[in-house]
Image 1 (cartoon, rainbow, N blue to C red):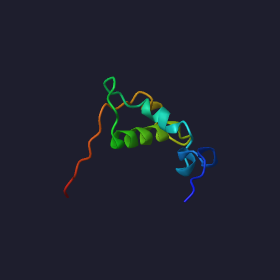
Image 2 (tube, rainbow, N blue to C red):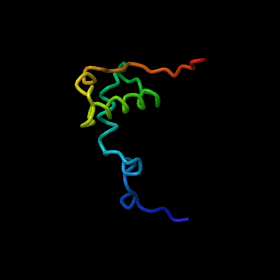
Image 3 (cartoon, rainbow, N blue to C red):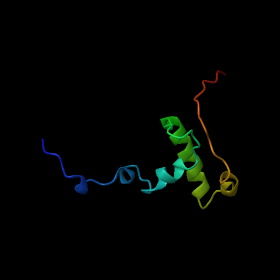
Image 4 (spheres, rainbow, N blue to C red):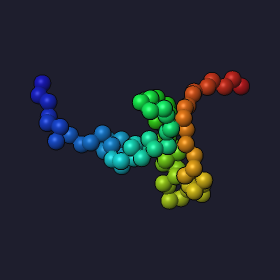
Length: 79
């Protein structure tokens, strides 16, 4: 099988329907110790916060500018 050159492939952000710098900007919402890598869940939460913050129809976008996270944990809630 032949591989297409990287220049012929769309950037990953195009495949996800996201702006190219969106994940980089969302990472600014994560405060970790130097050298610590954010988990997938932390990146997902940061992206959700960032998406709300930049949404033109969001009523709470100004409130989210000062919200950062240092960790995220998934919890199971029983009814």
